[in-house]
Length: 205
Image (cartoon, rainbow, N blue to C red; front, side, top):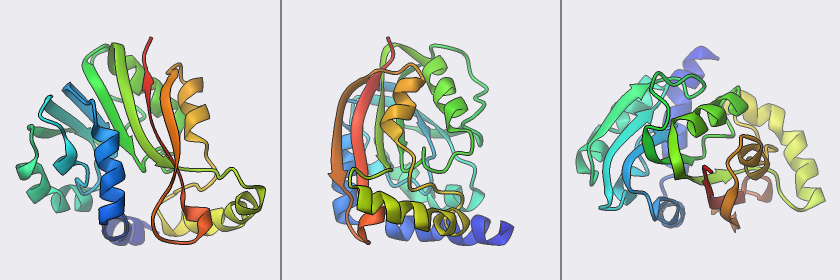
């Protein structure tokens, strides 16, 4: 699956997650970002157009070389300088309490050791800094959850390890980042097992 994950998944992800309705949710996730920001799972740069003017610098972690190349034009048009600081969100080579905010969108579903990644995010955030998130995950309808569990093995194989049944809110809270605001959102497009979304902010104490 190396070629598939390296060449197909980044392009398919860009196509499926760049629509207007998803863009509106991305814009809401970026509201309140300021100062120096770390974005884990930058992908093809679909959040870059939504960075507010209060952001001064964005340091990103992105494992895909294809996605990074695809993001070139979006990086140039971003409101703040964007630089790549690593490829593995599970181990960040950067000092503690460095960032004023963090951003993850459609990322926590895929990271193999998501607990380690969230622990690293917490470590590099300044006290009081926010983790802004827009993620998909487990539904609140048992019938939909049953379908998510059936489809998850296929989803993981075809979508670069993406899980349908992770609960991003629980994962974030377990990492020591108390939720400040959260809203369940219906993600646009696709059948119900793929539309359960979570939009919110967690704060480092």
